[in-house]
Length: 399
Image (cartoon, helix red, strand yellow):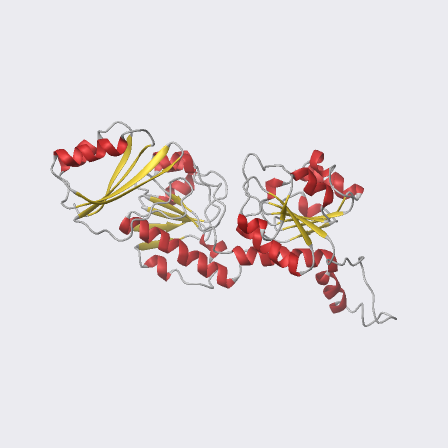
């Protein structure tokens, strides 16, 4: 099996091993390929069956140019660089790693808050530059210091990362508000759910922990900034486009927003004097990088060897363990009535018994795994492929 890593340097600049991935097949690793649409992407993929990416875009054109592709692994939580809807129609699951760096991103968010309130880095640099040694007093500061305890923090997006951030904030004696379209018991245990308008009006610190979707893109805009308290601190280590930076620039200039702290070094944000900007390293601990690579390999191996799908962004999660029959088959099909009946009828006509079966759906599509007592013939496979609504057939084992 051919596996191509298109932008391996971000995830692995040399501090972890690609050995787990190499156990699956012949691996070619490129440090970087392209971060915008480019024919070089398809050229490097070639006839590979699996690609591993971090931020390299995988478009419809690239997928069409690489007909041998069987799976795409994204070594990150975000997956908006892939045309995952189109990949599904081509029977290509796109798998991300949603929990590899949860603790690390939360840790970094808290670190950004503490830096914003205490300006540790700036004062460290000034001491190293000799300012303290030449200062007539024992203490000095370049910025007003802010006490975190007793403040109110608002978290937009209370998923796994948001919940972890809330836990630490509560330990710092911070009241935590949250706005999220999907409330959870885990969220209720650590935060008070409120409307977005209430969160904006009451928070001293606002954390962005929501994914980038059409509904959240530009959520920090002039209209919502106007609803905020004066002098808030905005912390963004989720996605850069959540913020309309031109609107934020005006708010920083006026003092409406006291400080913008972000892990996204966008061209405009790096020009803000009232900003602390880091180079997208919130989940880049050695431990997180290792977890990410290992988890991605396990997901790929389970899909390729067993047909099981975990943490897919375009397929339903579907797990039937290790194949038990003579052959395991997988079908991607439309999520319409009587599909299972039609599949069963084709097998019954050929006197093929089903040992085990599972079916999971996601929106308009469904994925079915079947363990069979006997292997299919070419004619049997053709009959399954011919069922109206079947998009792809795959013999996972046997045959």
